[in-house]
Image 1 (cartoon, helix red, strand yellow):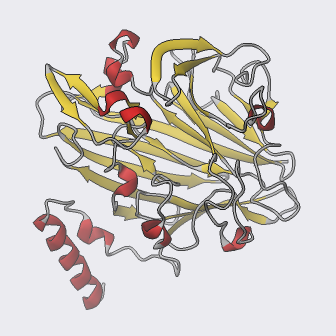
Image 2 (cartoon, one colour):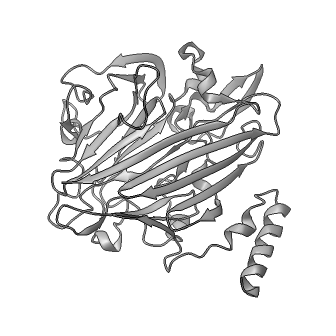
Amino acid sequence: MNIATFAASLIATIKALWVDGSPFAGVTALWPTDESGKYVIQAEGIRLAFTNHGGALANLWINDTNGNEIDIVLGFDHAKDYLSYGGNTYLGGAIGRYAGVISGASFQLDGAKYNVSTNGNGGAALNGGERGWGQLSFDIVSHTENTITFVVFDREGKSGFPGTAASCLTHTVLPYEWRIAYGVTPSRTSSAMPINLSHQVFWNLDGFAANSTKTIANHTLHLPFSGLRLETDQDGIPTGDIKGNKLGSKYDFWSATRPLGRGLNNVDGEENGYNDAFLISRSQPWDKDTHPVATLASPHSGITVDLYTDEEALHMLTWNEPHGAITLKQGQGETEAPQYAGVSLQMQDWTDAINRPEWQRGRKIFWAPDRIYTSYSKFKFSVK
């Protein structure tokens, strides 16, 4: 370690502690970035690049059926671009400390009412409110060739939530595989606090190749355990009811593998895409390592990704932004991204369960110091 690196580390630590931040800020300064300000991990057949702004995945490269390395996620070329982007604040990043909706931007816990900042439709808090984790700068405690661990100290009261969430988010790559492991230790509270984490990545398995449609309309999806979804109102807030995904409907991905394009328009021809919480109905216990809850594939690139998780809901969100809301990266053609440029499959618990005690999700969303929150997911890739 040279003197300049040590000095930068020491200064970062002092600054962080002065503002009641993370004690690991100094450690972050020890890990070098590439020329685009990103942290790269890699293994056989796969390469990922992250930024510590929201722990966002900026690039995921994999070889297509022709042996060409393509970048199959939406993101930005340089880490600094995430700071200046005024659109989706969760793009590519971790979602916390509460993924999904909190209706009324408030909740009751142990007789006390907690208010979270409103940033969603219908007066709701979305993905942790205005100070959700997509707005935070993460610290890094470990970075090797094939793994990186981010830490987040979400302090009590700063986001309206009780307690401090001391969190580790570890990303590991193995040959043609990306694994995510979350761990949160509740502290500075004697009672429970809500935790529901996820990660928002918008996939386009064609990598926006010049001879592709540049949308996910021709991608196919199979959700074998998701015959049910949460009913929502016009603002996307759960009503409390559970709906069946009727056979042959736009929500029927459980009975067979189906193309996404058929559901991007409703019966009146209005373009509306997907923004829905599909429930994962598996018999207990299940083997999270051998039974994927989702399979996304592209016949154009020949790439298939299987998602395995121990979570019990999957929020499917298509890129519903208008044409040109984001510019594709240099390796993707640097053109304007079209509507439906990608699809995000976000593993999490039932959205707004914090305000739906009748769902009986208490032990899945409220965590006290006597229980450490953990969550595990993996994306396994194959190429035909």
